[in-house]
Length: 214
Image (cartoon, rainbow, N blue to C red; front, side, top):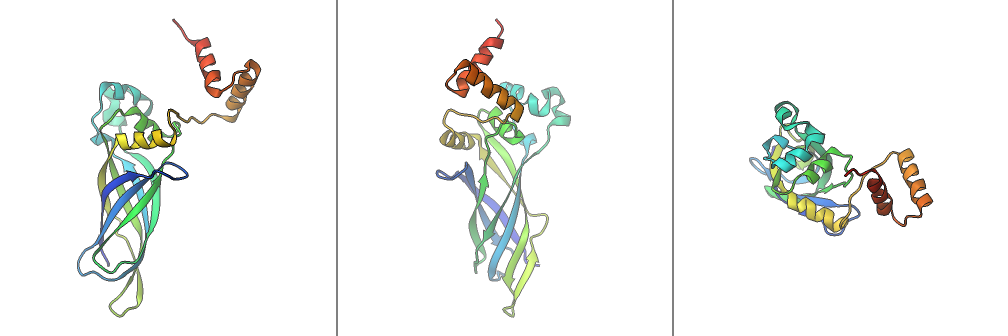
């Protein structure tokens, strides 16, 4: 079976895209004698290895929504599934190639991964990328052959928190997104209209001020 090895060599933010997007730069190498690759249908699962992070006290306080109180993290701290992504690797004849894996990113704080990133002040997030898919290649007789990517292929890489923060600041400057139930949004909209407040921020600030305590 044709054997491929994968490595994440870098991550960069796309400056102009419809949604915030990171490019994972993947290096792909053939083990043993190289054969002509026609294409690879590559599927990737990205996970965050939260156990390999060290957290500041203020970060631990913010993360209680996700993992509970820090004294229980030995049982509750677990890896997070970030997303699934895929890319078609074009033909190459040598023993190695490189491809950009696009990973769209959301800014909805009801999604655990986004809340996790927002709780961190800096440092790096340990990532694990699991690979699967199908390889199309030419055999010794020139005939097209098809083979799977071995199920145990994975790669590790550390994502700088600052890179994620800068990307979100670029796409949503001084902003954040939350998702509300439709009936709650309708009530907020009626309140905004009834009070004549010009923006959603004014409506929320007005409600927060009304419910604040000394």
